[in-house]
Image (tube, rainbow, N blue to C red; front, side, top):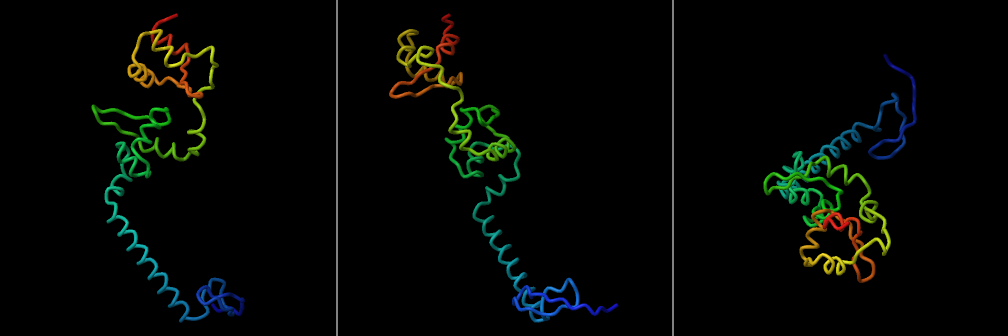
Length: 185
């Protein structure tokens, strides 16, 4: 079944114009077709070699990519961030963790969904709006009123996940949160 159609085409290898007899013709000659095939084969071999080199450089990274649950260190390696950044995200409530004895793990899907959201939106927004100076204690006021050391107070604040507001040189905590902790109503 031959056709008499003649279509002007541009060769995908040498970029010269030629007359094609079918709509699927890509190259002007067998020579260009062979050279394009060799170039594709060469490029695929180079890509495969580069991939193997990358795997050889980071064998741990390839093993981590297939896991559903990651340690803090593995999560940092996978996303290129430090362990302290991951702990900071956990303490701010952006990531959920699981504890198995002393081991801390994070679900891979939680990390993927977190990094799908623009990070600037999460990190720059305060969790709560500042309630006002009259509704807050300074750290010094809390220490004096409830007779607690600064280390113990900061530990309680961190453990309970209370929001601290740093304004000027003072750090404020909402009165209602502190009163609940110390049962001072």
